[in-house]
Image (cartoon, rainbow, N blue to C red; front, side, top):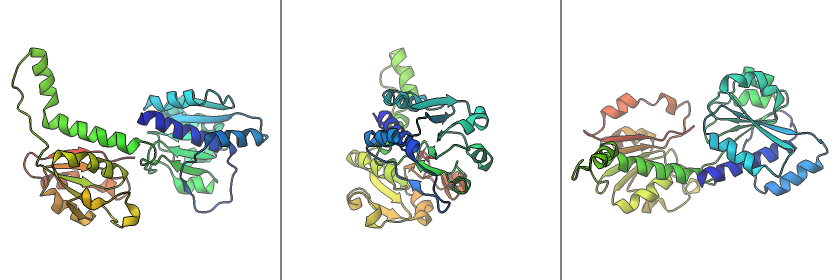
Length: 292
């Protein structure tokens, strides 16, 4: 379901790109993705361009994103969706109006070739792979997919719970035991009674905490700003101990499980996993959901 919602969001952005006009240079808006794609389609048709809006997906990864977008746009023949290999992007980007970035970094050299580009869209939240300043200079908008409104945060949170339980219950060993019809092995562990540290309490972190709470765990969390304006719900019911980035090493010493839900930025890319892990309790579990 999350994949379908993401595809819908991508498609809406594709429609918006077709009617986008180049604006004067200035601070680049990291656009929230628009709603009401039918209205946008009408505005595109009324624009009088009469041409085809071409959308480029960069690279073969997350293939469902391309498939769902093409399915969604079947009734909009004036929007063409293509997918090319990462190494081909610099050679063809000048032919496209909207570029969906997956694992391909879009640097200033590539942006300089994108003569028709109106929108560069990151397939996710983090935009560290896009040279925003270069895009601004060329009057190209940069957009991203918000996790809280597309189902992506919920999907990631469910995956985090699945992976946590899988490690505690020794899923790989259990698969072998089932095939061999062995009973009573492996001896797994429960999540009940554990202390769980959530690094980064944004959209994904909140959804992880909601799903952890019924398991009977103690939840510790770090966030740069705990202002109520930045939180979607009553956090006191979800978090037992709150702190900032400066507290994460102290909290790690208390945690049995650490789930990293940080956005990949210049600060977090230098995050020292080695030093951090050295502070763990013996046999603690570390799960990395750091997002791009």
